Amino acid sequence: MFPVAFAGQGSCLYDLLCSDAPNWRTQSDRRQLSGPQERLEFLLHQSANKSCADCGSADPKWVSLNFGVFICIKCSGVHRSLGVHISKVVSVKLDEWTDEQVDGLASMGGNITVNKKYEACMPQNVCKPKPDSSIEERFYFIRRKYELQDFLNTADQIQMSCPFPPSHQRHSSTNSSSITYSQDKKQCEKQNTKNRIGQAFRNSWGRKDSEHKSAKKGSSMSMAGMVEFVGLIKVNVVRGTNLVVRDVVTSDPYVILALGHQSVKTRVIKNNLNPVWNESLMLSIPEQIPPLKVLVYDKDTFTTDDYMGEAEIDIQPLVTAAVAFEKSSLNESMQLGKWVASKDNTLVKDGVINLIDGKVRQHIALRLQNVERGVLEIELECVPLTQ
Image (cartoon, rainbow, N blue to C red):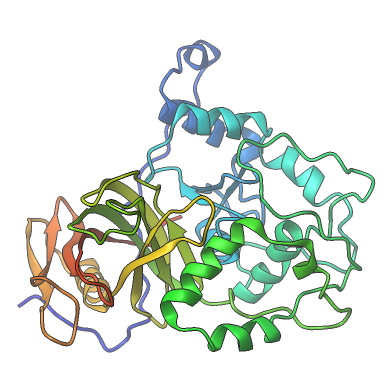
């Protein structure tokens, strides 16, 4: 019988999607590269990008679009915890790339070029992480390097040309400078869930320099991003049905997904109460698995975005099924389990977990809460940590 649960909920998922790297191309082959994925693989296998920009791990499979660096799976989790306004992380293998994204990545010059800028003034007493470094060491270094920009040459005031620039401004500080968030946390705890997550995500795009001026010498950094990850969850936001009206006769909806300290957002669809996104977003799964929060908002240009409902998804059954599949010898499509619809959750019907083509997936229809109406359809896929 196929196992349905494991006692160790922190079990890691390994190497289900490992694939052999393409061979180095000749000069003639390079001239023939046309598609974005082929061009991306060519960039990945340049000597400058064969190791993680932050810890040196071999064969990185993730990219920070904001900074144009190839990074490993462990460092990518820390980048995600900083927020997409600082570092938007995408997968070389799992995400679909556009020509514009590849052009932007190529224009930034690769890992060595970027590191020469963001590590230009790294003091001798700061140690760069190694492939076996802890999550704490990675978080401390990556945050100082990219968010605080402590190692940036102070004489270099010209920002690197970047099609996906971070919205924050450079923070000037001493080598030991850091940020405390206790006041923000107290204020945050006073807000309800829907307002806290939505407001935090929306406001992150327009951070003010004053937030960074609260840094104090010798203070300790926030530990918010320092968590171990056991896998990744790929969320395909499919469609909304019969959503509420927020703009006289229609709405401009978008969806925010939040998992722990991570938040990602879909595009806005104008004038549509039955929007079809079909947009895939990726989040890291923390060792202590929280529910996946889903919030829908109506985009407003001149006023605060309007709330259109929320729901929570228990992803524990999906992760349990993925761990069980990893430990099994199954290779044919089958049902692995389900999240049963009840009055205690927001499911429209049972969320069946299936093994399809070697991938553990779950289709879910959610009834939006705290609003008059609205259903959101989402597809989940549990992705193992691969490097």
